[in-house]
Image (cartoon, rainbow, N blue to C red):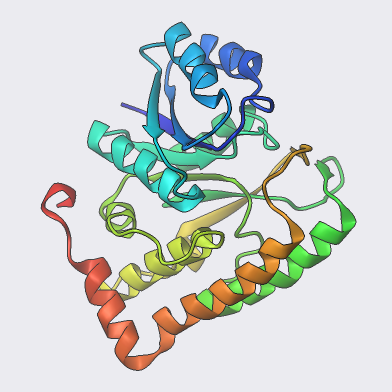
Length: 265
């Protein structure tokens, strides 16, 4: 099997572009989707079920009765994808701020290189359409700098909701345990992967991950991310730093991550 993209959804019925998914799926043979309804209180479940019914061989839907947060919704979808045996597994924001066509471009990067993952990056360059509110951009840059320092990796954009990974042993280990943070789980994920690599004597993600400058990213109204979340994120960065660096806690955390569950072996 080839590529699957997990789409976490919470009250997205008014923002899910059903036609965009249908058009993309109609022209695709190798990309599948797993939609995770994270305890929505609107008609999100009906909306994603509509997409599944139109493409039953390409779409799976998971339903949470209660809201668990994006981190756990993504993890549940990833675990389902791992169990299904997909070669490449990613996750994508439901609002399609990053167009679905970037899946193909990022997948091609994995197909023709030895990179373990490709991360979408919102870099405003000539010839690229990156539309973000100025305040969000500057606050995001402050957060990203802190995140890079916490995980000791030169990553530019940890929070972009477009990521694609090889389904390898490191990836499976990184997702077996629930994340310890909610809003900043992308940072903890990268920290886990780097910790796994160092513990198994592999080279750093600095050489095995690629940040792909997105050709287009457009802020979509109705985002669940608020400016106050960046304050929460700062607290969560401190928590991740504690897990990765505090002497005794780091040993406990590493042992927890590196002990494979029977189903993940």
